[in-house]
Image (cartoon, rainbow, N blue to C red):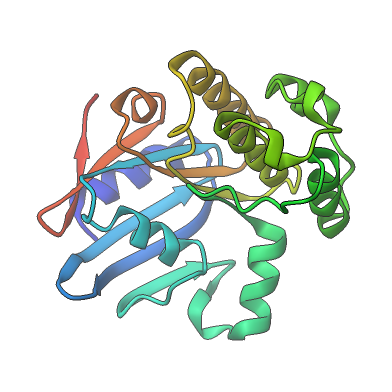
Length: 232
């Protein structure tokens, strides 16, 4: 483990924060090597942002941590086990109950209303729809609209609400504010950061937006195949 990661971990452990997920020596390539020997530890109440140019591997790293892509080298440890050695059923259970993924594309159910989309998440997780959350995301007036009638920003906020209603232990967000104006982006970040604090969760964001990244506890840049800490 590199010294930056060790120092970063020791700070959180000193605060009594429990590690939720640990990735060690992660490397991955497609046509070319994206990154090598990446170490990252996500603790309770921790928010991490990863910056980087398009094609640097930010989304690939997120997919690896979020159960969607087995790394070519290295290990992801979750719940005291090697995540990618636990079988498809266990991975599906982790993805369904413990992890929330906010994609750039909203993946809402077209032809359904906002409320119906939220009810599906509620039914799967067993949690009731939290109207305080809906109001904080300013989508309470859209509940009976078909999602195809909404603006891109509204769809993104519905997508975020659907994920948070699951009450996941870990949130992985790929450009979660990309379709939002600055004020709405700040409001959405407020909601996600508050959720993390109140639910002992962790948040891992990949973004191009340094203002969004600066609101997280830790920020990194994926550059030259390495994950480097940055001060914003």
